[in-house]
Image: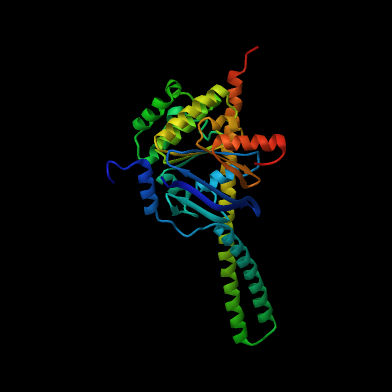
Length: 119
Length: 235
């Protein structure tokens, strides 16, 4: 940086040095949907595993069904974790915005009360 | 001087509703651009896109000639983009001094920040220990502006600076904004009422239903607007 550098020059330089990640627009929503899909998939796999094991007496097939069942549980747990994680983010963001708005409202009311003429 | 801030064919919206339909706008260093328009025209969304707070569906945001579409707002803020939102955005439960203290994240000391803020807005110095929520609307807006200036911005984005304020206070605030621009800061002002911003603007744009209907020198834009209003046609 030179001493003759103006604020605009420095801005241009800093922006040119900025590391910009890939645009992540809509990614949280994608993760949330993926989480919901995985939960449903886990349930479907669990039911399928139950039906597969119930309709056969072959222990090998039943072993496959157990494997599918375990996979179903894992899929559901991962899906639920993703869904909760990204739903909570959205909810907390909204809650913080609401808190901030309420505080501003309260401050406005207090200010009005202070400045209002006393009877 | 090339543009510090540029929006190119920006389309943006919320939850499937498109608010901006291809907005083109640019702000050069030391230039004051006034973006006017009725309620719901997309003015605030334009500012949010410019600050990196809202990612556009299409189009590009360029800062200093570089495409920064999708970059995190905090990175743009650190580089020098400062958004002062509608409704002042001060912390009402904190004192004026503590509100200013928040800006030490920029690397400046408390003393430096207070020097900048109190030199520009002496009224704030008198109320340094008061809760920000108990200040008048104009003083709160001064505080919001002072906090913004403490970040040493290169691009200043102001949303409805005059909202709910007396004309005298508005004119004092705009004097400060003009002074900031003279120091080489690019300023984009969003206003619903043209008179407030036209006094200091070098360039004006009128946003209607998410499209820039007119832009140019403030006088020309005002003349065209009046002509459209009274004669029912645009020039």
